[in-house]
Image 1 (cartoon, rainbow, N blue to C red):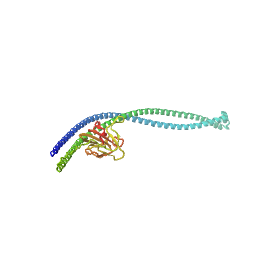
Image 2 (tube, helix red, strand yellow):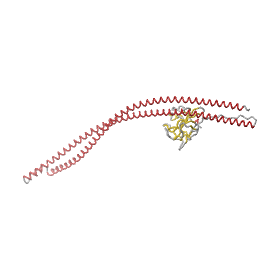
Image 3 (cartoon, rainbow, N blue to C red):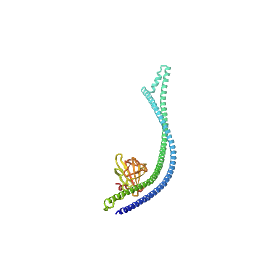
Length: 430
């Protein structure tokens, strides 16, 4: 019985060594495959970046041409606007002239009215006194030749005055009507010219608007291309960070495996000594100690408290694919925790993810990547080792987000821009 324990110990040690060797082989093979895929994707992204840059250059050339055309239109438009302003000034002056003439006409008409009253009074007097006979009586009733001449001259002056009044009225009316007609003709001409200029202005404005829309469209396309390049650069940075994190995570996994190996050897040694001590106390045979090999669970804990506001998969009628789940909760200071132990591949502020943390984890020889997005703040940094349940940050509403929540992704393998490795996290969480 004394030889059974050493023999069993040798067998266990042999199996443990084989297990560790196979684990190291698995880590190395998986890591080499993962790094190869990362390098391949980096090369693809670089080619896409060069293609996008070429598109940007082409769009910028077209945009320069449009801007040159816009400058010509703007120059012509400005000249037209200046002409319009000049015509408007002339029209205002003409309107003032017309108003002045109208005021003058009012005065003349007042004089004409007064003259009409005098003439009417003259006619009425003549009618009441018997007309021209009375004029003769006036002349013949002279007391002397001198009185006769005075009366004759007076009558002539009255007649001339009446004639002058009539001629003045006729002349004033004709002059005013002629001036008014000329000014109105000039005003009509200016209004026609103004209408023509306004039509030209509308045409140029329409051209300018069309060119601006084209320019805005090109500018928008250029912006999107820049965003695509930014996304590719960001993707390369994530992939590069993952490459480094995978190496560190493999080293961490090795260290943990070696630590488990030492702990298991120490436990077995302690069990062996305890069994030997028991044997010395009692010569009766004792049963061999039973134990189970420690294993790393592939289970992940929930990274935050709350409810699932948006599940994994297609949504919005199938027009959008959601590569993770959204966990929402009201209030402030909602903690975000690491769903599994691992190495922080990246911790940064993304334009789309907002405050985001990527964690690479090796569990039972399988690489997993978890993503924690839209946090209000981050509590860990790139390259840092984290343990399951450790605080990563606080739930927030940063990046492309419409409300406070955690966007959580689980990738079986490395993260990639196509999210092809994304899996539904729900079955993995407990």
